[in-house]
Image (cartoon, rainbow, N blue to C red; front, side):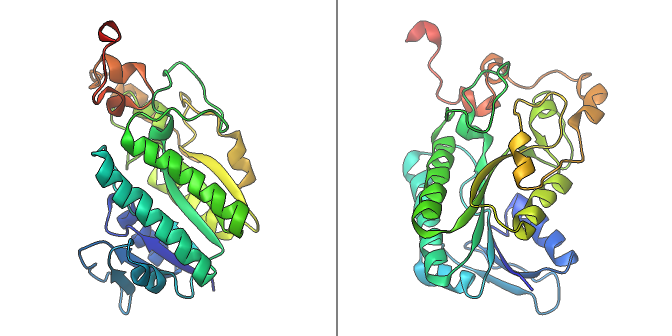
Length: 266
């Protein structure tokens, strides 16, 4: 059986994936950060620790075939914190994957790597990066790290540019960016099961009618989304848009407006 490791298992999406992977019978090792995880099944393989520590990484990846890497800072923060949590930790993870012969990684990238594109521009997977902050910048660098470790060391990676991964869409932007929990799990299972992926990027988004992103390339992974935010449109369109003018203009939403210099002040 394929051995799976899940980092960031105590986070919002890590919690969802951990529960579902265990329910579906996967051989799973889950890692939290500074706080220990509480077992949810008998004899669950769990651990915690700082992924900047090679010894912690080696323990996480020992005997592992596929890593689902969800750990790191997931909001906009000062650059030094982003570098420590999202880049130093990621490099240690890939170095550990070299040592432990991990064959494949799912890297949780983000739509914020391209968040400064206007909302009326439909993006292909090979679009240029336009990060909307230091968090998005770290995901741009992360995709580059993944590419390098494939080209130089043969470690496969599926980079998933996650949109708005929540149980159900609740606001106007989500009509374009929503990724359902079920569709996230479909991406994860295809990452685990696909025979060969090399280095690929997919948009982490459901089959939304109003999507900002052309996800035709996801067919290479075998990902076919089954849900559509448009099913919630009638309810959402009755509510005011919570984003300000800048957030409504750019695909990154509220992240785009953080520390934004108005055009007339430049």
